[in-house]
Length: 174
Image (cartoon, rainbow, N blue to C red; front, side, top):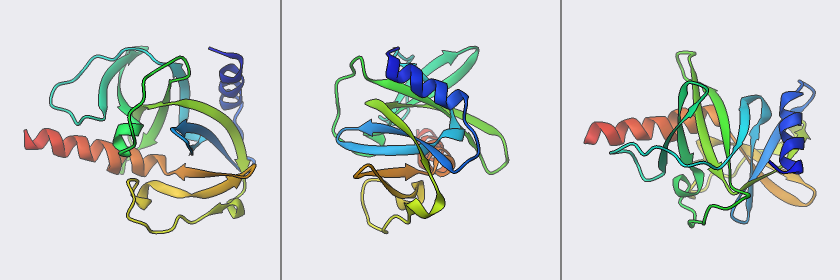
């Protein structure tokens, strides 16, 4: 991993509860963020094992220290243009809780990680209700940092309702 990615991984390992810390990442020209407390680790891009009859945004699974982790291409899930995977492409391994309280682990393929920002509640504004490619239920809000807008995602909603529920529907239709 490069030095910037090592620094970000170190910040994830040293996370604390002062403000809301957000890991930001790139998808095309847009910057998104997730609560750092949901980030388990950041991995370089690796080939996945494909799973038949899954939606097109499910790239497959990887073995992460004995756990089978589904890998989702967030660009495809959000209906963005495709990109060639390169050295800056990474997989962010996230943890979410489902409504029953059990942990779900999922990997999101993104174009690259950007930085870790500390945001207080007043810096995160509600997302406007628009019918875009990202359902507003999956967005915690918008934050402006260093003159750029970051879409802060709600990881639990995105994983449980936006990804896993959609995969189950697809599989059940088969």
